[in-house]
Length: 113
Length: 111
Image 1 (cartoon, each protein chain N blue to C red):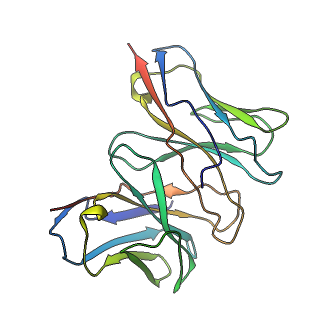
Image 2: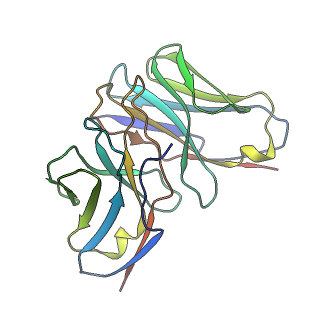
Image 3: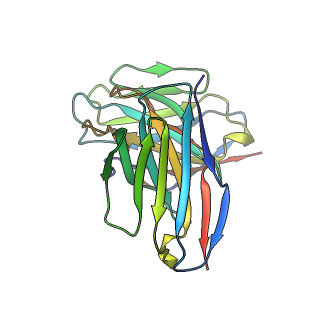
């Protein structure tokens, strides 16, 4: 069966510090991968998606970037965090076919001080 | 951008059926309707999805109107653990097959 792992579960970072969140998927190959952010009390906002190694599409301009160095690894990064980057970050995967659901990880709660 | 509208909140008595409505009047002919739920501080959990026929699984039933402009998620016997935010999503058909989440319906199951 397929599983998705995100870490860390919680993170507290100072403003201006760098960020690296990692997501890995097991049990499947060539998945579509997604990063979402959820602000407190809000819905999920799609940040990035990837349909293959090295292929990244950005949904919104922001202080963050994403990379996919391996087939089942998706990384969310920032060089200098802003207060507005606080939130709940979720990684998801799906098969490439259109009618397949996305499956989410347990998320990383990021607090910027 | 979200293509669905849902009530902000609903209550349901424990043991009764919970019927959660969703409007998606601009849905295209080949776009699927998905339902997810999110319990506080967890990732969204997939519930069910469908195109035009009604669907049922071990978690819920999905009723899609004949014109496909609205749907209803039915939890047949709601329990306290079903208290969550429920998202109705119409999936964009393009390269990434992205989901665009709205703000969902906050369902509270009352003992």
